[in-house]
Image (cartoon, rainbow, N blue to C red):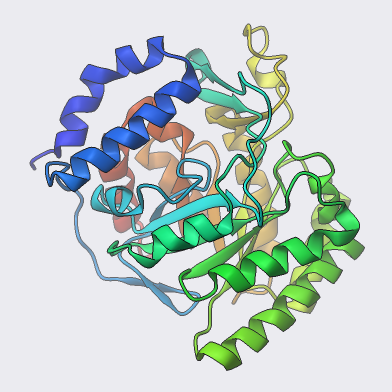
Length: 348
């Protein structure tokens, strides 16, 4: 099976990238993706094509997705799709552009195959991303991850989410409501029972209005944290079942860094992703699958660094899976490996 140019080159350029500041390397990689794709030399990752997967009324080329955070500004959607992803989720995007938190704000922990970030929803604003998405040619399903601006108080957060939903409705295949990033002050408070119920009622109502106006049904999913208490999980399960959601993404990054001590970056403030979050992410995924109505699909993300990890998410009840940190450490070869394992597990 032939490997794509990206898979061949990544082992060669990875040492150089890892000598750079993590965020600078991230930005360089995105630029390289755009350039190689525009020149027609990116190639396509070697994946085994299978039948499309129907989830949330959408047909996915395969079950593997790129998680939000890798392409915050929707700058390289076509390139990511070319690598073989069945899903490309962009963002998180906010109503107004914002620079995010002060740098440095992204840290690699290679010994743990993990990342710590406190990016803070740095993005060009929802309208800029929408302009880019109008011109996409990606075959992948494209999700748009939305959030509130850092200076929007929680009592007005609903307005920010509705603004973003309206702005992106005609270009998104699905919309992900991010209430779980640890890097925007107070955001996770929106996971409380009363707050999430009010938010979802408003969002679902607007979804119905936009469906009537456009003739399109755009699913809305909610992205949750791995650090929820048992009570918090029960509250969310109850609200999701009562109010109705089209899907749940489990999970975001964790604020629990105990598994990476005494690494020199262990005490950095921010969300930890990658292999260290896998166990907790899987636990939360399994609990939600047991509690949610069967027709509510789950997207599993967190700690996937191998094809076996992706298949484990599937076994635990994920209909789709997403990767981010594993791509940093493994490169594009992870896409082929995970897609194949997911294809092999179709019957699960």
